[in-house]
Length: 245
Image 1: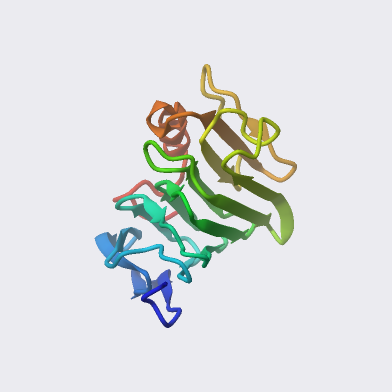
Image 2: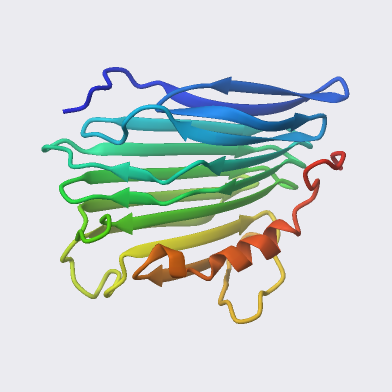
């Protein structure tokens, strides 16, 4: 059973203030570490400091980017949902991007091992004039495994309006109606603008300003989305080291 008895929310907040920026960090099942912090923004890495995800665990993450700021967020490594011994686990991420702010999150895979039951919530609210770029990857099973059960909920809003609402439930042996023979779902979402097309890569326009690129894969390392990530990220305002707009 889980060794974690309390639910603490890992928190990353970046706010403008007096010609500089203020960074607020709090640890939970992941701990934020500062890679770079200057007047225009910050880069923060998320590091797991304990065995996770075990049965009964809840990993909560709250990210807020204040007006005009830019935050680059990245995972140090993927997250594995281990055999829960009858208990499920939860990953709950909430993102808030204010007007004129930018958040780029290069997420690593959530891997659902044999015997695990993982629920993943991803919510984002982006104000008009804000931009969000997030890579979200989920995988059934570690190497040589079939994987457990995965229940994914995604709700992204722009200027208070729904931009992308999805629910994906998959498990080993579910059949071809879900993922076919694929084990990995790799999704890249831009919200707040429509990036330029990348040659050879399919993308889908949202009703609100935004674009989704997605690949279903047998192996995560075969994904072509790193090329798309690099191209779309280059379009974001306030590149690291530049003053905010």
